[in-house]
Image 1 (cartoon, rainbow, N blue to C red):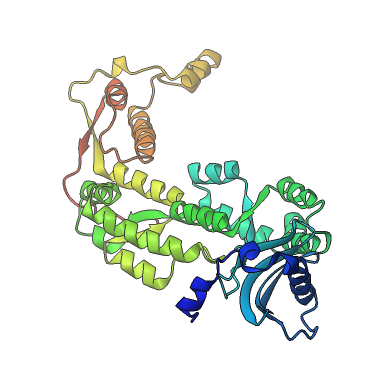
Image 2: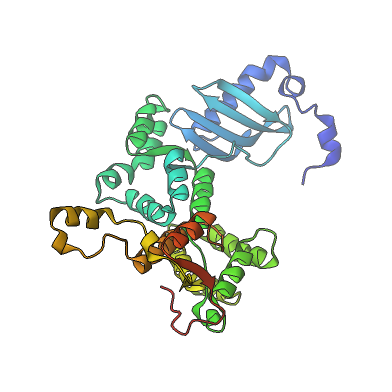
Length: 367
C-alpha cells in the first residue's frame, strides 16, 4: 500500500514531478525497458506489460529519479507514439479492456427466426456454421483467429476483408456480449410451454386451455414463475453452444404443471385442445334444400348426371372443416371462442358448435 504522505509529495503529473531537463532521458529509459524487458536497468522496474500488437505495448512500472521512486503507466508504439497514461498514480497494470469478438448472425436473420418460430433450428445452424465441414463452417470456424493474427502482425491494416468475409456468410463480427445477448433472445424464443399431460387428465380441455392462458398472462403469478425458469435456462444456455434445457429445468417447469415444447408443436397441441373443447350439434328443423352447392359435384353432374345424386355439400364434412380452420387460427393466440364468421358458416350447413362439459377420456395431445 502506498504511503499517503509520500503520495502528497508528488503532483501526480509527469511534467510537474520530473525535472524538465531529465524528461526526455526518463521517457527514453522507460521505453527501452518496455521493448527489451530482459535489459538490465537498475533504475527501471517493469511490473507488467500488455502487448497490444507487434508495434504497440502498454506497461506499468517504476523508475528511480534522483533517489526517488516514481510509478508510471505508459503506452508506446506506432499508434500514438509515447503516451504517459498516468504518473505516480497507479501501481497496477490497467490497460484498456480487451474486446472479445464473436461471429453473430445478422440481426435481420435473428428477428426472422424469432418471428417465425425457427429459433431452435437457427441456434443449431449457428453452432454448425462455427465448425468445419460445411461451406460456411470451413470459412468461419477460424475467421476470428485469422483476424487476430492479422491485427497483431499487420496492426489492423486491411482487416475489413475479414468483416466482408463474415457478411458473405450471413454474420457480423461483433463483441462477445452481443453474441451472448443474441443467443439469450433466441433461447427464450426457442421454447414455449405446454400443460403437462398428467395435469390434464382431470380437466376439461377448456380448463386446460384456461390454465395455459393464465401461465402466458404477463400479469399472473404463474407466468412470473414460468418466466423465472426460462430466464435461468436462457442465461445458462447463452454462455454455451448447447440448445436444450437440463433435467433440473424440466423438473422446475413440471412442478408448475407445464413442460418445454417448441412453438410449432405447442400450437398443434392447442389446436387439438380447442377442437376437443367443442362438439357439433345439428340445428333442429334445418332445411337441407338450403345447403350450399358443391362446385365439383355440379361439374360432374354437368358432365354425366348419373355420376351424382345431389350437388349439395356434405354438411358434416363442411362443418368439421370450418371448425378445424377456426381452431387452427385460434391456436396461434390465446382465444377460446369461435369467431362469429365461423358460427355463421356452421349455420349455413345446419350445425352449431357447443362446449363439451366433461373431460375427454381420449385426450392425448402430441408430446
